[in-house]
Length: 206
Image (cartoon, rainbow, N blue to C red; front, side):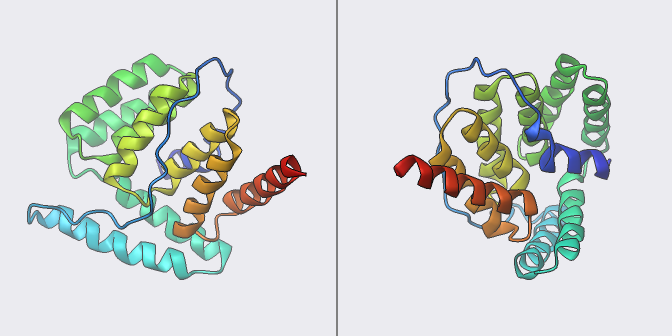
């Protein structure tokens, strides 16, 4: 599952999609740590503590391969819902995505979100499927929900940046990629995107 998850957030949003949707509105919010769980749930508290430690390491790390290993650990923590039912539905959704049965995947992800609306990966995976189906508006709405739950979600931030770029809003796309790099400084794809967008925007101003 880890390999599929990495594909979702580090390469999936490079898939070309026919742009027929009107450009959705976007709120570019500052990066803040995820909120500490309100209830003293040992599982949630352990997750939050582990993520804080991993994100601190990800921000400090200057070796690309080492940073990638930390990002994989973060994604594994994100995937762990603490519910066998939710985990099974997520696996079925992933199987449907691999088979390109996107409506089926959406059905499973709708069930995930209904069972646990605070589980960021349900929203994030659904954002990915909406993107693959060419529905930028719905994808952006689910990205927004993902980031409300986990503002450091570099996969969701990268997805938002790609949608902004695909809909011609390069300045906002640049800001979104800069947010990715605040969280994950060694993400090469985001570094390249920032460089390209900066040059494109500078060229427009000439």
